[in-house]
Every structure is written in C-alpha cells, then in structure tokens.
Image (tube, rainbow, N blue to C red):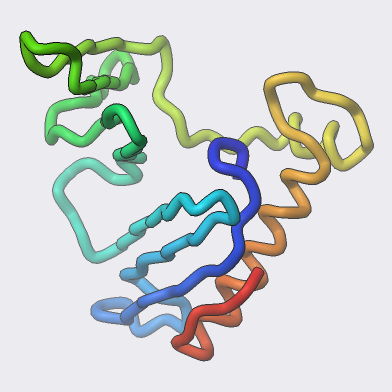
Length: 154
C-alpha cells in the first residue's frame, strides 16, 4: 500500500500441508492495485532452507526490475545486511546493473509508527492513517478470499 497505492482486489491460494492448524502453513496473496499494478506475497512454514523470513522482493516496472534478497546468499546473517540489485535496459551497450547494500534488513514491525499514525500524528516518509486503514481493508478482503476461494474486492 505504501509503495503502490490502494488495492482494488485480492485473491488467496493456501494449503495446510504439515501443521494441520486452522491457519494455512503455505499461502500466496495476489493483490490488484487501483493503479493497474499487480503484487504477490508468498509465505510458507513448509519451506525450510535455513533462511526463515527471508523477505525477498522482486519489483518490475516499466524500465527495469529491482531485486531484494532473491539470491540464496543475499543476506549476511552476521551483519543483517541485505542486497538490492537494480537492472535496467540501459542504452545500446546493454543492461545496466547496480548493486546496493543498505544498512539493515527489512521486515521488522514498526509498532511505534503504527501507534503514532493511529493517534493522528503526521509521519513524513513513514505511514499515514489512510495507509493503515487501507492495509486493514486488504487484510479483511484477504480473509474473505481465503474462505471463498475467489477474487474479493477490497
């Protein structure tokens, strides 16, 4: 929501392979954004490759792709740094590939920002109350889609 804007509809595919719990242990959420963008989130308790909660991302856009932690060795477990790679078409000499290593791995919950935004505080470059509400609407639609097995409007 923060990156691509409001979500129009969601669809969920899930399975319970190992745990037998009421919640899925293997699932994929597809999001269709009002802007026309499409996103997909995959989460699994069935995959055990020694890299739990890897937080990988592939972001395709009109002029290139951004990859975050998509290589098996892209996160250094000691320094907790990630690898970002930008690939663009470039010019006649071929694709341009740039790598960056930000200072920290993403994926932590920002409870302090959530609380401040719910209280109505303006958080530049962090999160807005509208983004929180939009995210909650996505979760509600995701829950309906998991039960119905259909595309659900947000």
